[in-house]
Length: 339
Image (cartoon, rainbow, N blue to C red):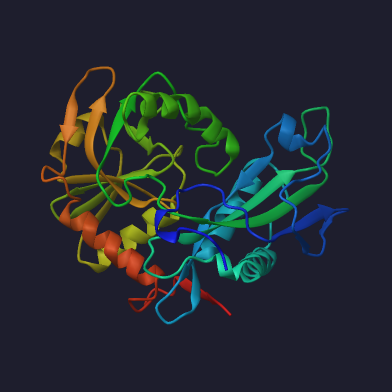
């Protein structure tokens, strides 16, 4: 029997029993290996350590009311990992291998999937690294694909409660023609200083502006930004933003609710005209935003005046969570049952 306080889990690492691994060597992927070790034995000249050949994903498994465990939109995560691999010249992971590894990792750790109605889930972390040694700047000739899982609570400690965020201009997360559109570790390393400073100054995260003009909303820390204005769902369109699977799903739900979906550039000045704003991603799902402060100008944009998430954000959040948890029919075919 696990001694875990499921309802008060942080978004952090909890040791589970097994992880799965597979090597690409000699021009082909090998067999899946099961390991109980939390460490990786890696060459000192591995390209992931020197040249940033590393990409990862994040998706979740949910225990549902019918007792089944469902994974949300794994095909999109597999596709995004392929795009990331292509972007930094790694060997991409075939869908069949991704699915087999994901299912095995969940099955081997099934008792770590949190009970239904706890607000927690099993986070699945696929990881692809250049494990082959190179001293010159060039792609590796060996790659390691891994998946480990861990039970998690909400990404922001507030959960589905409005948070305060900060606009910053003195740091960039990614350049327009760089790696912002793929999920590689370097983007997150570049965001750490601004994110930690925001935390120290009392904000949940930092909002990055575009690196070229410092005029348009880019990423909301580790998540995508979205806004509600009237009957429109609006989210930034940019070559330096990671395509969020949660954002993609929310856009589909918004259209299903009869809303207009707009992908366009959003200026800082546009913030004054929105009814609701939020950050969205796999880890947080939706984090409604209560206040945005521009660190440079001091200007403040306020939402959620009654302290609660706006009605549209709430409806979108509840619908997405209901599909993930099996409480609402999955008419979009987004969930996959782990048998």
